[in-house]
Amino acid sequence: MRKALVFRNGKIAGTLIQNSPGNYEFIYDDVWFSNDKLPAISLTLPKSQKAFQSNHLFPFFFNLLSEGVNKELQCRQLKIDEEDYFGLLLATASKDTIGAITISPIETVK
Image (cartoon, rainbow, N blue to C red):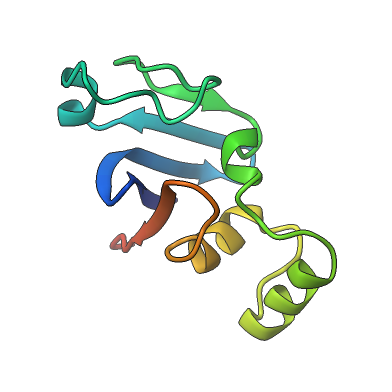
């Protein structure tokens, strides 16, 4: 299991979890959800108390990843499999993303 905090403009908006290669969840943070002034992070992930489930990395997060030659270079330099989208997201989306969303890995004890 791998987890990450999802930030919007530096504030925790929720948690993104990869339970297994084909099992992903996104859960809004309680403080974010409770504040009516804070928007959903995406139209495809409207504010809800339920956990969003997917059998692939949510398109909203997938679109934060580089493509083409940039992706190849990142994967080679970071030693990440090109098909490990969650790993690539954890390694590259903590700073300098396009837009307001950043991702920060949560270290979990095995």
